[in-house]
Length: 144
Length: 365
Image (tube, rainbow over all chains, first blue to last red; front, side):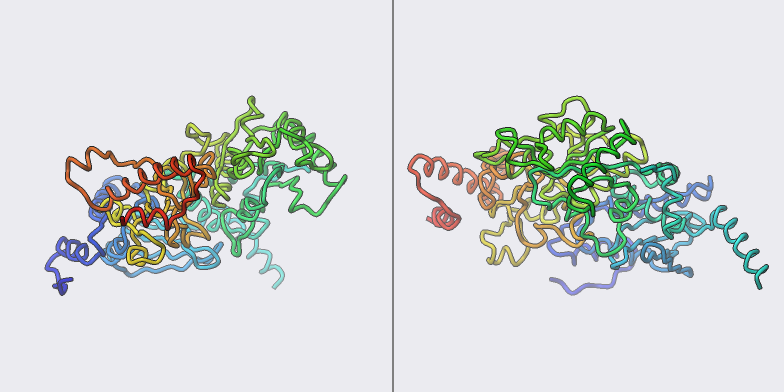
């Protein structure tokens, strides 16, 4: 196997990584997916609509998922949600592109999504929760 | 048993937060191969759904299907859903026994007439009703009685779906499937020996969300989970395409993770979700563990020519292979399959026994 050379561009980065995959057996899904994210960002800017991509449904060869996540990188925001196990909600290096990973109680991945949005829906507090919080706070203040 | 509270309220009372519920719906949609955009609709439907009464009948079975569904060690989709249906009868799991258990079943049937879900695992013996009875009632009689006012039937496991192991040659009990007996109810087959747990819960969730069973293939299986065959989704497929095969369980090909076609893998003729959803909460599946697919979600898989004999017909067009001069592993796989068929025919004629070692010796000579 040739000694890897540092790539000069993102496209070269993708091509370089594909040469290091065992046997070169790629699914070829990474680059189209990145373009799909690009289109979704454009759609968000023009219409305000959120797009969600389910990574579980996309077949990827060994190493491709890691290449995708490495390309997207990490941004400023990282949220840990504890509900039916852990969930990690991370804004990638591209603002508005969020990586959401759901784990079960044993730490096994249940689902992985890319959401192109201003703020993922799961982070917003629902109206019913707000009403319950108000009632609970009023009750505690009265007892205080 | 009244089930007036909607599922969302019941989950909330159990301590499941709104975010936990959304997470649950998102992963459920993913498993059911539904687009993520449907998650809000699924959440709303499930939130307002009433807990269905479920009657589970176990006939000629090994309890593997129940074990598959209940062996969860952490809150999982199937555990959550299982906890929030009203399982009104399951003679392996329920505390009651004898007449009390049968009384519970009859009460649930009366209270939820035409609305309860009937889940069946195990095949039904027709040769002699005494082969398998519950509380002195034959499996056939109980199935017909309970199915009459069921809203829908889910046949869990290959035994209930297609007859399974009891149905294998020579079928000593006259075992048949649910669809061989019940002809006038919507039935979904969830085959596998056992089925992947989340497939069972996915079908239940689909019923709760949409009020109907999911879209089915020609064998009555949900397309979301059985629409692709193992071969087409297998991570070892690139090796098959390049003609790289393991020829024994401990050779270099096996160690390098090459295709298991020559070791009897039935992936090319098996439709299931094992290669994508996998087992033990996504840990692995038989091929990834180094063993070929047994074809356990297909009818008559026990009689498919042996678990360690290569398939008799190659899915690859032999003439095309010859035209392109590919004389590598794929052609060797085809040759192995043809040799197996020839040897089997010869063995049947002369009553000889043939094993994998014999076939390997023949290939080398």
